[in-house]
Image 1 (cartoon, rainbow, N blue to C red):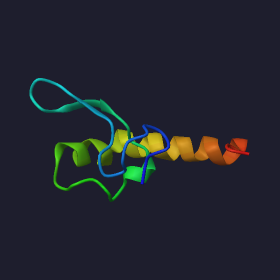
Image 2: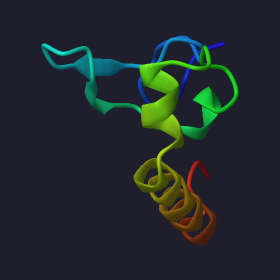
Image 3: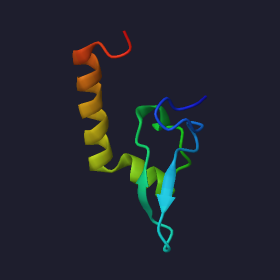
Image 4: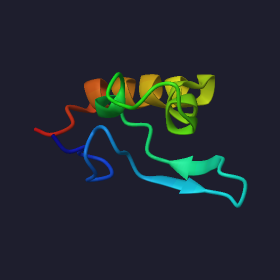
Length: 69
């Protein structure tokens, strides 16, 4: 199954890592929720408060604008 946002498999979302192996950027689409290996740096990035806030904001925008119609 693929993510509609990053186009990657839901168990392997797009991520950019720094030289220390920490995620510094990446997809936080809800399709990845519960599909990423845990515990992992990728799962930590996906489950942080900022990522949850982004998903909540996107859900409101999508619901309010009839996205996809």
